[in-house]
Length: 639
Ligand code: FEO
Ligand code: CA
Ligand code: CA
Ligand code: CA
Image (cartoon, rainbow, N blue to C red; front, side, top):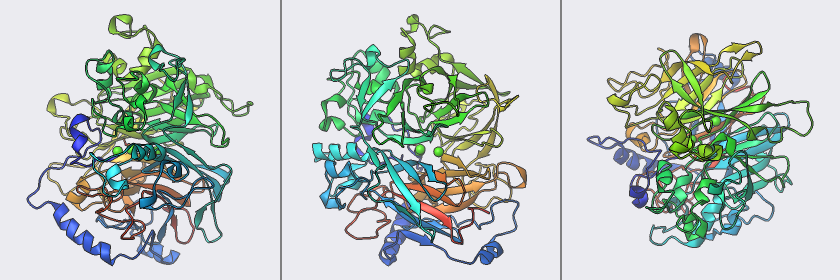
């Protein structure tokens, strides 16, 4: 998620996701703006980046480096278009507004409605999960839609003129899309039209609350006096998939949608989660429940991890309260060797925490009926780092400070106020923990710390040792070995800094890439492994892109051996987009990426964006889209 800097409502909300933008004598944005607008007119209608060359040429062009990745890194430079390494191609699979459900009307920017949007692909795509139907050629693709930005979606939009219908469109454009996709003999992916499995999940979809906080007094509302049924999901950032084939959608910046008054009984709890008196994206325009003066518990029903079964179009999504309530960046699920299920999740805010859930029950892959409610019972812990290791400290009602004296009456309170519980436990304040990726070969756990411009010398800790961490770092956690292999449920892990990111040219920055590194990056956000155990990082740099003439993109590297931390850029997103969602097919021959908020720069609007990717139609704003990246010769990516 990236936030426009000059947003009028900014002062009312605590931005979690803001890059630092120190002034320079000649702001790059001015130069880039001129250059990009010229390029904009030169660019043809695109949506396809292709750099064709023969396999032999690919190998010949690959430099002799220590990396197992053979492609030549892209140059670091901004463009109104996407770019992909030589020998690869990048094809747009689906754009904001394209049909998902049967009967979806064709999209046009001046013809938007909530009813249409609820059948069309949503806005600001993020997490992607590929769920095979026929191996790596046909599958289900789940895509999260994180947030909406009216100024980029609606012509002539202003804060003052926003309407209830626009708020309803935004509610319909968040959540998730489930697509059936297939690959043709030529390698091109397409969305299967009218698939019976296709689905839209929105901010209005009925869901259940389950686990220890379900039915809690602080989850009950006028519409739901039992506290067990909630309408919709908000701000779905990254996510995960489970061993039993369900999808986990993480609710991140849910605070932006509610008006949260001062001097109410819950005000202090709301403020700990960044809820402000006036919502940044006021859905109270559309529905009263988003006004907490009227419905004080509604916000407690968001900030969870949602699980749903993509193979049953009628399944009811479930908010799994045992995983805690915070700004879940993602929900990375691992099956531990002893059968317990482990979910890692960062809370993306400066000085917030890294969490881990371990199920009580064990998953039996051969058992009947999937996993049922395995995510409803277990221990939620938070990471405490020291020089020697990291300890996972459990958040259990009645233990340590989590008692009535501190305002916790039961485990439901602990989970609803997981942040405050973790404060009291002494969790290590992190530099905005985003996605987590686990290497299935070694069990190593990689955590993206995106940046923190407020750390300061007085708040350093072993795992966050940089005074002004403008560019982020990546932690490499090591679970101990048990008889079955890495023990993700262990109390104590080892840890190391895998890389400190940032541009090498800046004095005193001292990033820690491989000495022969080919592509620097900053603000690591999402992470994934390919089938060969290589780490792929995507980035979210916000306004720093324009300052440094450096786009967000997809960067691969080895995690061990001579190519350790030798990054190469495979894909560059168009200007002002962040890159999210990277997901490999099981054969490693396609990686899907989600291009989020293209053209959403300072001063950009729906009418005057910094790019009109991917359509490059003068009457169409930029459209967040999912892109399929492949090698032109069809071989596995990176080889
Ligand atoms: Fe939605 Fe933390 O990125
Ligand atoms: Ca981010
Ligand atoms: Ca993210
Ligand atoms: Ca991810």
